[in-house]
Amino acid sequence: MATFLPDTRATTAADLANAGAGRISREAACDLLRADDGLLPSLLAAAQLARARFRPGIITYSRKVFLPLTNLCRDYCGYCTFRRDPGEPGAHTMMPDEVMEVVRAAERTGCTEALFSLGDKPELLFPQMRDTLRRLGYKSTLHYLEAMCEKVLRESSLLPHPNPGLMSAEWLERLSRVAPSMGLMLETTSARLLAKNAAHDNAPDKEPAKRLRVIEDAGRRKIPFTTGILIGLGETLEERVDALIAIRDLQEKYGHIQEVIVQNFRAKSGTPMAHWPEPDRGEMLRTLAVARLLMPRMNMQAPPNLSDPHYADLIDGGINDWGGVSPLTPDFINPEKPWPHLKELQQRTEAKGFELRQRLPVYPEFVELASTHGNLLAERLSSAADAAGYARKKRAA
Image 1 (cartoon, rainbow, N blue to C red):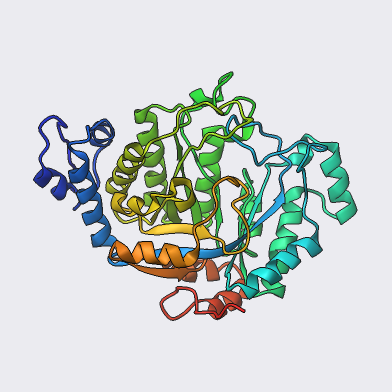
Image 2 (spheres, helix red, strand yellow):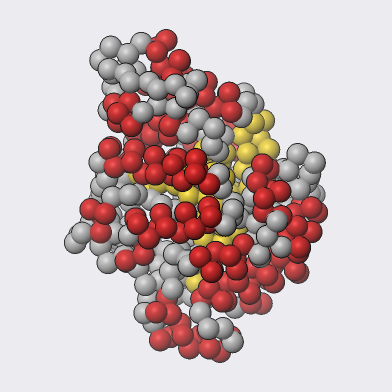
């Protein structure tokens, strides 16, 4: 694989175009993240060339419904408005009938993904959550999640994609039987952000080593997995590159990472980081382009709603996927940032010269791998996927 070591003061457009043929080094990635605006067009062109060699002409998305199974959480991240303590306004745990009511509505709007998001092991901190689980007949939040994933799989045409936080190897294995893919954002490899008054102060489940262990355990079990970084939390540019390289290294070892998300921090009122500076357009594009050059043959995603109204520019950074977009439910993690309408998403994608294509929560090239984890899963995937592994066309009611 070619290695590219630029001096950003003298790098030419031709040098960067050659970089698109193979991944770049850590040193080069750090240099390019510091590059001035004059080099940005050449950097983006190199990223686009790398994407064209990997996945030409198509940008994908997953038509999803967002199911916030519980927003109780034992972590207190400095940027989060999703989590709640029991008794706080908005604190809520969905009941099984409520889950299926939303799933039925999602079927009518042509969704294929049931995205389960939830707080990390709230029963370890809150007796109220333990009481709720006891009434429902479950030992833990993960037991409840497993049951809801199986219910969705058995009783609907949707496919579950859970994001439950830290999991043991046993729980990865159990959930892989009722969900074709799952996810855990690495966010960062910077342990500095666990310090007092930093982004992950009082968030023990955000310890990078623990999150890397989960991603690696998923790799050992050949589970299609989603991960990514959250930029703008206070990490250095070097730490940002290190997080991307950590993901790349795990993918090279196990081959199970189906997509890498590059997500930009957005400041939210009422949080400790409410006045923290947000990454600007140039920083986001640089990070996307560098991620593409570091990982030229991996699916790369950036959420469109977090860069609205100029989200189409993200395509210039080398992404080939928009992630999950819901025609029914808000982004409960970022409720102040609504999803784009799917018709508009299609128009803006096509204006950039790409076909917008609907995928399942598991990417086409990972459908076969996901099917090996259980007969019911294999049956549902066979019904949901077309011959190329994308979502079969469904007519919304």
